[in-house]
Amino acid sequence: MSSQPDLFPGTSQWLEAVLGHLRWTVWSLADEVKDVGPGWLARSSSLPDVWALNQLRITRPSPPGEVLALSEEHQADLPFRHIRVEPEATALEMVTVLSGAGWKVDREVLMALMAEPTRQVSAEAVVELNEAQMTGLMRRWLSEDFPKVDLSRLDQVVQYACREGKLWGERCFGILGDAGAATAITKLRSREGTAWVEDVYTVPEERTRGFARALVTYAAGLARAAGHEITFIIADDNDWPKHLYESIGFRPLGLTWTFHREIHRG
Image (cartoon, rainbow, N blue to C red; front, side, top):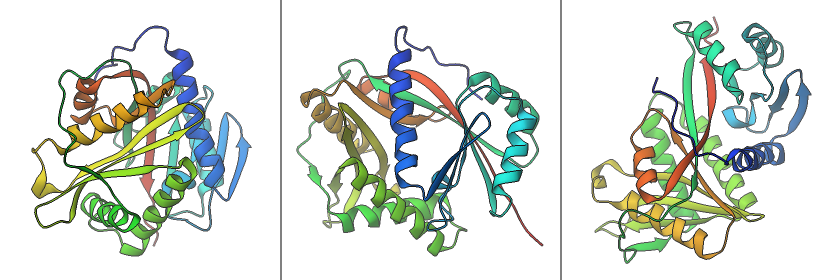
């Protein structure tokens, strides 16, 4: 795993604000949310394969054994275990405990727009996408990331993306290929003075053409022009897009960890 990013001083309030928006999103869309020990549990029988809506969220420091026991107690009927951890100390202890034990560990960096982009890019090719174009790209993206997952399960994730977008009043921007089909996408969401740039994707055959940079720069510019107090984006801390976002003006606020394990029965 990569080293701890250099976090900007004085941004702890921004980090808590972003985490608050992300928690609110799950609380608003899950079928059921209840407090459990050092955090809370979200469950959604209407979308049982959507990890985000069937998660254990740890918000206060807790021993890894207690976290895992809570997961077994409250997620025993699911074909997976999905735990999101905010406190760094708890997350690092869990990484040590779960390393090599069949768990997938993802570390995400929450980033906020704090600077101007290092270079300007043309927005001439940017268009607003309709729902059909958006869902088509989302399905292709998910099929690439999870090629062995049944399409009905992926459709649940697309449904969740649509619900999340409506909750945030999102706008979808994209770039059309030479044949007129949507080939790249970025979403801009906003609520209560905060903007969220989300779901940055380009189809494989159109990559390296600068579409992601153009779309994220455009969305960030709209958020800045609207006067949002905070504009944030979420990136995999172990992957290259975070460096693209840094060049557009985003800076690290903090980290969250996700621990996921598929349960193969009988």
